[in-house]
Image 1 (cartoon, rainbow, N blue to C red):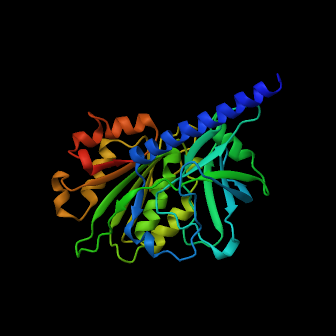
Image 2 (cartoon, rainbow, N blue to C red; image 1 turned 180 degrees about the horizontal axis):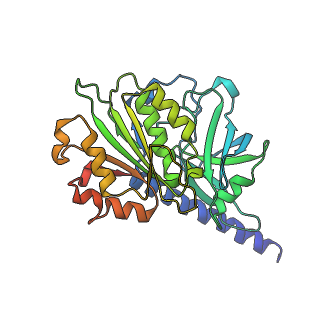
Image 3 (cartoon, rainbow, N blue to C red; image 1 turned 30 degrees about the vertical axis):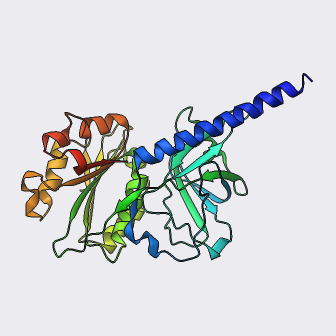
Amino acid sequence: MASKVPQYSRALAVLSSLAVFAIAGSTYANSRKPIQLDSASNLPTKAFTFPSGMLFSKRLTVTHTEQVNHDTKRVTFALPGRNSQVSGMPAGSAILTQHTPAGGWFPVFRPYTPISDPNEPGTLQLLVKQYPNGKASSHIHSLQPGDQLTVRGPIPGYTYTPSSQPQPRDLIFVAGGAGITPIYSLARGILRDKNDNTRIQLLWGVNGTRDIVLKSELEALEREYPSRLRVTYAVSGADGTLGKEEKYKKGYINKSMLHEAIARSENSSWGDAKGTKVWLCGPPTMESALAGKDGALAELGVIGNEVHKF
């Protein structure tokens, strides 16, 4: 009888965690609201079906891992059916990963935005930065080809409407550190949408040049869409690496950089910042400094629904 008590307690813990997860998942989905492109419905018909409910999950198998820099890994997973399916995930949306630490009772859930193209057959790819004492990131960094990861999602979002007006719409995307992943996903989706002529200025703040982990991908998009994408890196030099390229700005993203981005737009309605749309994803300190009540954007007149935080 005594041996059944731990089993009962563990079962109760698992059931409790599932209930908490259902509530947390719903809260996350409703509060963070990843962006969904209208054109996402035009993806190939054989899209991988993620679990429709937060209490259901699927396991994906690791096929390849790559150490991108000192603390970031690119992990590639095979979708069931291999090349017969695509992820079909809306741009900027996230999946929730799940694992139970060794000796633990409660599973750990973390959202990650895939960086792989939603039209790429058979593959889903995550770019994961490992944080000190980060349970989820450390677990994903430990995965090897053949290992599996439990996933749920994608977390539903609301609709991003493409701009097809003769006068292009201008957006400013601001990313801090690992916050680049949803920003990159959304920017790529917008640029590749044939029904959208939106122009994007991307400001990405990093500690050092070694943290620019998607540089080749962003440069490829700049070459492909030279009139619609401009990328600027704000390098604080906190890790001792600054870089000398023209697009590297020394320091943190600040009011001056944002004002310069607004002024650069050819849209005359930006003269007093009205109509400006800023999409931001980064650490809390950056979000507060830029998008807080008394932040840089508020000083520039960019407030309310003109600012979206992932």
